[in-house]
Image 1 (tube, rainbow, N blue to C red):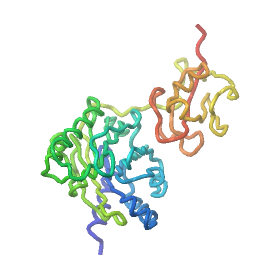
Image 2: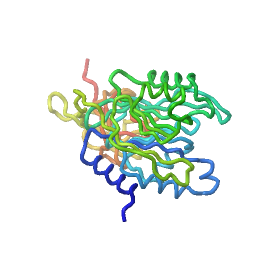
Image 3: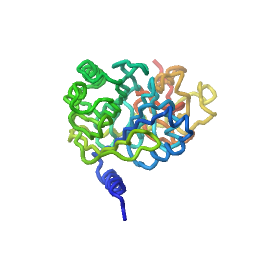
Image 4: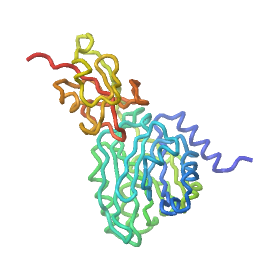
Length: 331
């Protein structure tokens, strides 16, 4: 006999496959110190892996987001390791980054600083800009001050038109002053007690809590429908032709700096290191007197593009990127 949780997961996966305006979101406090003490990372990774496919995941008590992403087989995900175990990961097949991730302080308790981590993303299927935020609330501080700090942090990170999706172990239950403040801003909720997923304008389609062992918290999962928008999805190709339709012209690849592993591609494109250039191809091309004509994250240390980006858009969560550079026109 099928379990109710199995039926819920099957329904969520079917919804994700059939509705391009729906986003699958997961929130999970990993209970890191205890999992590490008892060497249960294999079990923890299996718990996350069980939930695939999904689009966004917010981690609390996570000291190695990249390791969890690898261990759970979240291929094609970018991640951000925020301070004090606040982590984010997002599926590049569903989202492209609109900027660098960041964090904002909201409180402090005996375990240290508590923050909101965030990243602005664009939903590929609909073009909707999304602010993905995550928090781990402090202990015994569920009054108005914490709520105002959460609200101010979200408002400070979002841009006009952003849909907010926020995950968290808030350490405060619905009905507290703190949750009243943040849920006043983000009223759509998958409420599993102190662990919740919230949104301002995305509607909850389904969701609930699931077994999170070996964590002492449940894993919380929700399907959210993005609001209707007139925005069209961005359609950017890595290797667009020049305005004249002619092939690009560029310096010999031997003159290109910071090429990763010697990987070069057709049409003045190479796999290059992100770190010296802030993940931006425009800065990379400018470093040797060229102009950027295309940018992308690669699939597997090769010339195949996983997703494309603007030349001035940072490619995050990776050590390399595909940049297309052209020689500047003579003045």
